[in-house]
Length: 507
Ligand code: GLU
Image 1 (tube, helix red, strand yellow):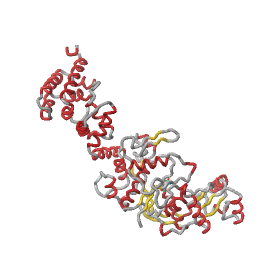
Image 2 (cartoon, helix red, strand yellow):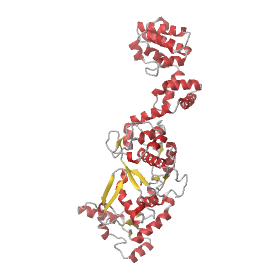
Image 3 (cartoon, helix red, strand yellow):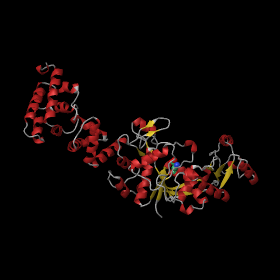
């Protein structure tokens, strides 16, 4: 059977970065196995719906380069892919569960349910919930005569439909990460399958759809593990037990200090985004995304892939294509993984380098144009090449290379104070003179001049770039050219002499 996987978000807000990892593993498996990656929008909880969330999810998937094979945008053989458009389908299957006695109507009001829970709590019952014992004293299709149930339904009394969970039965299933999982049904609640608004709950709709969409592997976060026994029972009661998918529950992404599940609060605290792309929430708050922070999608995916999966080798750098080739479910890890943003930055640096200079030169020229600077492709390539080891985010190219076009407006006073003395002053003057006298403009000529007087290099750097740190100084001088270098050195000499108040040059 062809591999079918799905990502099934509820469109209630931005995609947490942990969900991006879940999507990635689904996507990798589908592509590796020549299968289908399906996007299903689970929008049956009308109260929690956020209108712009679906578009946000789609845009995120496009940016990440993990476009679904089937979904609300693409359509496909199992359309529609929004659960709110599939209500007739759920009606049909709930009827079959009612008919077989695995589901029942329940008319209890929220107050009655609360009162039941309070009574059970007072009696110190371990699981105070609607279950095989407590349902016996509630108002439902199991305790009421069939005619009365019918009459109440006809009269429009609100009801839900619940799953009849068996008393004390051991549900066993094999999880792709956890191995065998056993759950005693006495800890489970008679879950609501259909709500009073006639819409299905997550459990019911998701099992029906997973079956109809021929999902072979359910890969999701481990917070869904406790729900899986309910899903197993539904597969069984709907007559689909032999087509139950393989369940794979992914361990949590942890906060950088390991103090629990990674949350937006942690992201804020450590200063990194929690979402793939910026989320403009309807309440007007704006949550920053990895895209806007300057991460490349492939770098983000490479980073996330290795948070919970390993290739079995020491290889760290992967394109999405290489991840697809290397991926296997067997290599998913069992324990939670700490989110280390420094590592994400490292991946970004590496992927930026891998993309080749021509593309970054174009980017550089565009950034330069924004400040009114025109720069040839050749020049842009040379500058990008020079600064490439200092780049974490694309914007750094221009930040690091900008000084080629703008002379320093100011210098670090502290550096000058520390280094400016008779020897360095004379050294700087001599350097400036010999530099302008050079017949050939290359590293072999320039480097020895820089080395002639000890202590002038930081001053030359400051004079030319306005900074204490930067790429190779000789290369900077070569690229800057004689005229610009000379002009900047003279300006610096005048400035330093004035601040040291030692020379007649400034008077
Ligand atoms: N709609 C669920 C969610 O919001 C899907 C969980 C699952 O993958 O089964 O995450």
